[in-house]
Length: 428
Ligand code: NAP
Ligand code: HSE
Picture 1 (cartoon, helix red, strand yellow):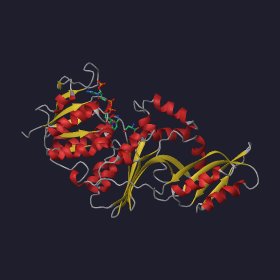
Picture 2 (picture 1 turned 135 degrees about the horizontal axis):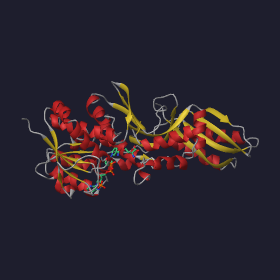
Picture 3 (picture 1 turned 90 degrees about the vertical axis):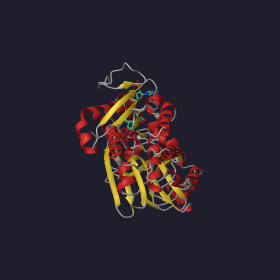
Picture 4 (picture 1 turned 45 degrees about the horizontal axis):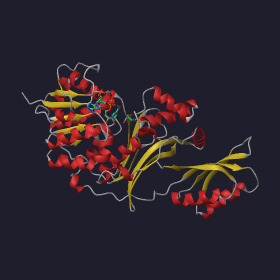
């Protein structure tokens, strides 16, 4: 009989328990598809006594993830504990150093240590796979690494944090404030233990940095991602952007430019009728553009037990079948260091401001924009009861630096109350 592929699973929470269930419940299917049985030798978590909703008595228990990762009866170490450093990194390094293949869902660890871990895997003849780390159940790593390998990738973008998309969607559909929608997401258990990872754009930024490495053959450069969270998005912006035909999304965009690699994760406006504009709730969407294939849109569950375990098992079955790919689609030693683009590609911007309602106020704002070389595409002023008139402006394409000059000039006019909101409009 063909040798089984033997797993050691570290982490038995949402994803780990899901993986154990699939291995148990779909044993015949997995063996048929890969040509060999997939079994579990040993598991670990912090609390041995916790009920995981799945029997574990068939497997050896290890108290220590590093010991588990290096057991003789483990062929593939499946890291599902989380955390960028600590036991997840120590056990992953130990497994790779011992020549064992590793499958992980840990985007934080890879965003910070991806290059070193990919190199370690290669040096030891092991593979390191991470489909579940980006956009949960959507097989975007496989698409980018394999299916689209014959393309120059011109842009990758997406909504890759379901929690933020849920919050923004609920603000719009329920007329909720940011705080109310945040509390709702918290009650539903959507938020990470440190919510700033979600709402600060950090988790989605981790994912974007991994996609950029594959798309552009560069070393993972999370530190070079321009990050902005959703905490400042107001219900007014959501309503007024909708009035102009847009939705606000926490959108990640990466592209290689003549100025270097651009990686941005920030709230952006997208047309309400576009696939990204129509993405509601906790769902993820990744859009990839290649010079040969054109635009590909992938949509699906970005989190949760089934979808994430599904992605882990895709990697496990590849290994069972003998598919051996470089972590980021090409040898780690050939990945280029990143030069970060300091200036974002020009785009139209949405501006919302409150103008003192007196003659000439609008003219002063228009002059500030004109003097900075910014042309106005559309403008709307709303009826108002107070002294300040809400005004929306959509500009033609401009640079963020020109816009900052204009915003600085506006601040000196004495007609703008408070700080204007400026959000990029992404062409999708
Ligand atoms: P989780 O539910 O919090 O589970 C984490 C598991 O790791 C728990 O079983 C915990 O043990 C165990 N663990 C933590 N520290 C440990 C240590 N020092 N030694 C041994 N075991 C330890 O997390 P999760 O949601 O399954 O996420 C796991 C990984 O998948 C993370 O990297 C996460 O970012 C990634 N991910 C998750 C999702 C998702 O939808 N949940 C989606 C994509 C990617 P106890 O149970 O005993 O506390
Ligand atoms: N916190 C993440 C999200 C979990 O909301 O999308 C999946 O990575």
